[in-house]
Length: 115
Length: 502
Image 1 (cartoon, helix red, strand yellow):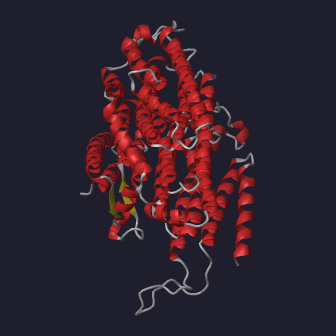
Image 2 (tube, one colour):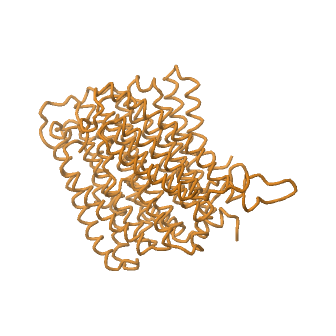
Image 3 (cartoon, chains in turn brown, yellow):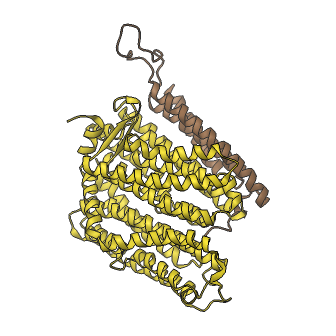
């Protein structure tokens, strides 16, 4: 399972890098989406994929079973998903506005402010 | 109430209060000014509390560390919060005149306050994932401030700024995940303990490089700085002033935090790399500035070269060097913000940022010339201004020879001095072009109303006076910086305060 996930993460990062290097703004945004998905999956996989038990402490015990999944990475991913969703919404609005003001989605036409 | 939490809640409360009177932008101004005054008082209270107690830690929700989220303030964080408050107040007052009603109507002061909350949170948190969250709070507010108004240059700059910062966030998040996988904790103090016990320092160094890319992108170090000069000169002056002063320095602070507390197992490699990057950052920044003839672009390139000095102090990793970094941080934030604010005043008189078109300000407004002269010479490192002592500390630390880089450090000292000279050249260029030479069209200094003049000049005078004060009483400020550096170099007090261990 870890191997499959690791390969998936690698492919996602590669796709994200490819999309981010495109000249179209929209494809670049897709790149950011894929990149954040890759990172979320990376957190999940790096902290260990376990199928033993859900992370509830059984009644009468004081600690989790050793086979239980670690809930913290999932909490981190949840937070990260919420943040990336909000940021993505902002980015899309920004790109829409950029398209209205500049009438182009080609990044090569947006070099006027570069030093 | 607890001094740490108070500092976070004041800008938050101000933003919420502004939201309640969304339709009355006039009220936003009053709330923002009052909030900044209260925030400055609260930050000073935090500073004195930290000064007396050493390190203060608060467990949010009373979950004991390392399980809950901890806020922790050592002297470095407390100093940074005080400077944030000073800059916040200065820029808010400046904004009252500089920001147009349309931007105010769309919540300029709300996002300014939210951004300050994010910055404060990043300085005060004791948890690496919480640091990520505060970074995002700061970033998304800064995205809004950057794009508010929607002018064409703003949008062009914002696309680069937003996308590169999002990529940096992705690096940061991956690094958090991998670090957690290796250590099983996210608390900075707990990480400091566990990474020292960890058996595989090579894997840790790999993670350190991920953090270096993430924070380096935000700090604008070589070769990750290209978004900065492409975007910082596009928003209104008040916005670019607070960005220039504060935001890259949050990245530097995060670098200082992780490379003094967590990644100290393989310093010949990690800090050696920082040393090389510091030199390249200084040189590329200052050379980039020489080619510029736009007031704000030129200053943006100087941010980069100055970041190099701070990284140099961190790379040397001795008490003098870290004290130099801390001193440099608060000197630089004040001076750089002030220079941007002044560029805005010259723009108000002449309608342009182009140095070739500017001119005659020395004759028309001698006081403004003096006000520019103080931070400009301070940036160039002329005694007795604050910049001289900041550069002096860094160069002295390089020449002391007690760092781990007996060969590299003196070379970097020479580079630092040469870059200082070139900085002076750039400042002289602005002086010659904007203040000394005859203007193409005669200036009309009376065009500024009395109210505007007060609102624009008072923050500039305030920050210039601070620069002079730091320069006249350097031992007082340097003593604080030395103690802050001692805490960074020996994090036992920090770890004990957070983990409640003896």
